[in-house]
Amino acid sequence: MIGRYASASSWSFDTLRKRYVSRLQSTRPLLASWIAALDDGSLTTEAQLSIKACAHHLAGSGGTYGFHHISAAAFATENAVGRALVGSMDAEALRLALLALTSAIDDIEDNNLVPRSKNGGLWGTNISFLWARRKRFKGRIVIIEDDPDVADLLYAELTRRAYDVEIARDGVAAVASIWNDRPHLIILDRGLPMMSGTSVFMELKHYRTTRDIPLIVLSSLPESPAFSAPSTIYHRKPFDTAQLMAMCDDIALTPELNTG
Image (tube, rainbow, N blue to C red):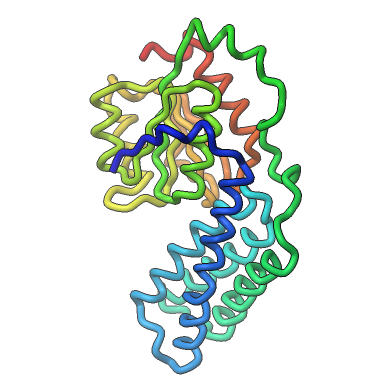
């Protein structure tokens, strides 16, 4: 699925973070139901996969919004349920991880939002020096990311800088869009529905038409040799917004790096 948001450039970081906190609060009942199912022995494989997907998203987005304790608890939960899915279930370890993640969410509710400065975003910083270059060279960026909290933040930050930005929620839609209209930069998540980020990467790097498009792999997973290729940067989640935006500017504002 491909998406664009006409009003994205007007979103503030505080607005996005408040929406993120709201989503965190809606996750709490799910955590409680998973803990209850674990306690009575009714936790299904399907539920374990849901826990893994939820924890994976929170691991990548928590620190990005300044909630580093959310990322830490989510990483622990993802690791615990991952072991369960391969037949090494440690019910107590998974239960403790889910309780820690619940506690991390409760901590946000009890103490309100963390200071904005912890995110490290560029919003509010004077970036007027970029506009002359932007008028000479307008870059198109495709974000391939199924986590709406991460995708929306990237979209808002990049459109605020006058980039033409497109969001693809799954790998199949992303590849089709890239073949139809070559971008100047691709930001790729590894954990995608329908077609994995690894498969998208291999597909794009296989063909001469797309192999030289600059690509930032953005993932909470450790770097893999599979992503060693020219014109590729591997960047871990949770990410510092300022650092990532500077990276995008270095790539997309330099015409000689891409001929799209």
